[in-house]
Image (tube, rainbow, N blue to C red; front, side, top):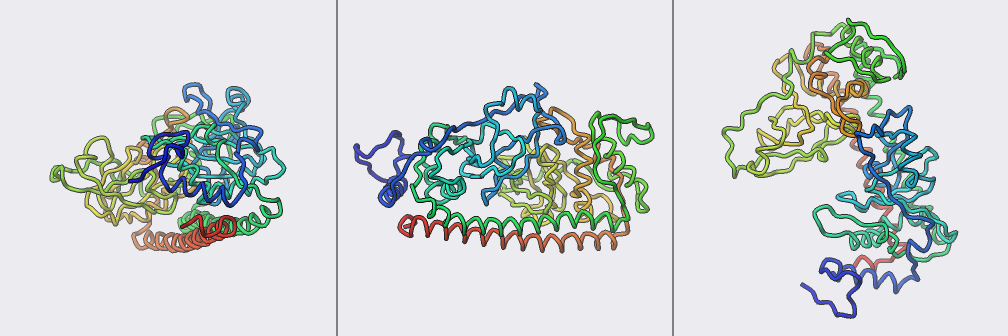
Length: 468
């Protein structure tokens, strides 16, 4: 509970925006620095759109323009390459006003991602959706890297927190982004601050890169242990398909489909090929929930709780009455495998072997795999289906519109399963998970060191008083 003097009420009259944490923080900033608004030092602040899927606006990576979304903005203010691409004519047409330039500052302005800050450092063509505000500086007194790290500091995040509306799906508009206050420092002061945190950002990026290299090594390791040799991915604009090569009931007109067939062919001709996956594993089986009552708690796994190609999962606990309809049901020991773009490409899958309850519920965008034979070691199956080559093959058989494409369960059911003896499966899985442990360590070190670097940036810029 708090009181606000009439003369101290700002543009917003709601209690949320007039909390003492905001007024005290901003007072300290204005006392310590002369400030200016973002809108005063920019040539433009803009956002994009999401093209309608039915308009055939999307295409493959080799022919398209990167479509950047808030999920592509990293914790260290870098921006990943997109996993969805729009056609050049869309980029130059209806989305002409939201083309990115090098050094544009990207701010997530919608939903749970509000507060993510990035700087676009690439020269590739790229565009953004409506969940990102792009800020383009035109004032020589400021360097983009300083603005980015300031916006990620506690003060910058306080402005974003203040501006967002406390509604079901929080959002900030472009005019409000322009109202954010920035401290005016000399270029030498900015460069000094940026130098240290940029070094820390690079060190974090190096460790993340090494962790990613371990993932690539895992992919190679699995196929090497199975004596499978595949050629690099090669998109083909024209091709012929033999009837004998078709592994399900459909032919797909995609440039990567021949490569998918080559992968399937290699799996079928492997010395350990034992038939299709559905001979040993149930895909999307029925789960008996008859013994659950409405007040009982069960495990819940949203898509956001599952890591990418690392078998990590964070369980939530919910009442059975809240999840018994409209969600995917699974049991402890099952394998969850994302079927929708871009989650499938990113390798979102996990074993729920340590799930707190016997029965769990989760996103409808998971396929559920449950073993029905003791000759299968599920960690091995996870390692195989998380392999980058297998994920690339699955993309060639997407169904649905470009923005909401999915892999049907027929891909998994008809998947040619190399199945060595259980001891060999365990040895392969053990090798994979040993590398994953090294990857977890590198990523943990990277995040710990990055957090320390951000704290140091704030100490040097703002002083301790703003954290009290």
